[in-house]
Length: 249
Ligand code: PGA
Image 1 (spheres, helix red, strand yellow):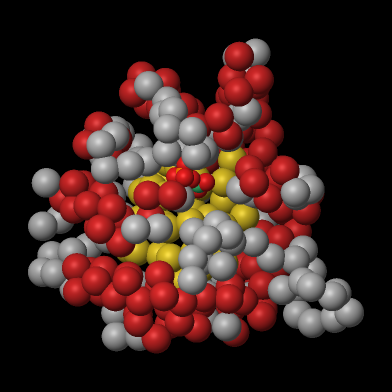
Image 2 (image 1 turned 180 degrees about the horizontal axis):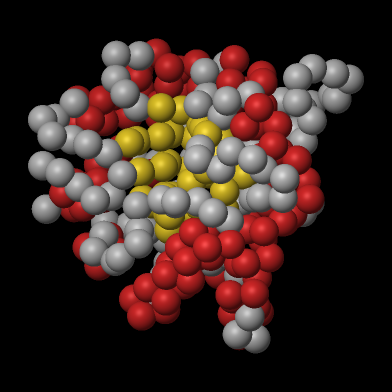
């Protein structure tokens, strides 16, 4: 089996228990199948990273964080975690700019700071961006995406370790996915933007928002798509494996 889809990122959000982590042992065996050539990354709450490390230690499955503080290293910031601390705790990836974090106050400038510090701490970034329903209705999706990406990448020198995840806000957790025509259109727009304006030779572009084992059959064939950011459908190991499997058939 080979696959054009290179990344399957599980975004567990504020979910999961130690018991539920153990149920995911099953994916280790699956990831060791002959010709399996994709990357699986779990982004659980930090409280579960240790448990995941135990079950993934003999596999290539990586771990990621879901956000961080905008300053790096250490300091008097009660309740915060820096990129350096996340890297030290075993995370290789970090989700930044997720709409749920933007709703909690992350703006493009803060996201930019977080990206710069996360790169310094050798984390790979999963940068999320996308329009709200209101912006979609106003037909300003391209403008919104372009602004979010430009401000996030301000003064970022090394962009090679950034995955670009297009997540329309109205599609997250709702069961609504973009129609094929629009998704193709926006992915092409994003790709061109990253290549021409941001000088990234081969950008990796992901899609996130209500990805499940039914719509994956259509989504997997769409051009300019290198992976998926999967929320609720990644919480159950069988569902998650099923999504990955279907991209291989
Ligand atoms: P969802 O979440 O798959 O549950 O829509 C995706 C995300 O928020 O990353």
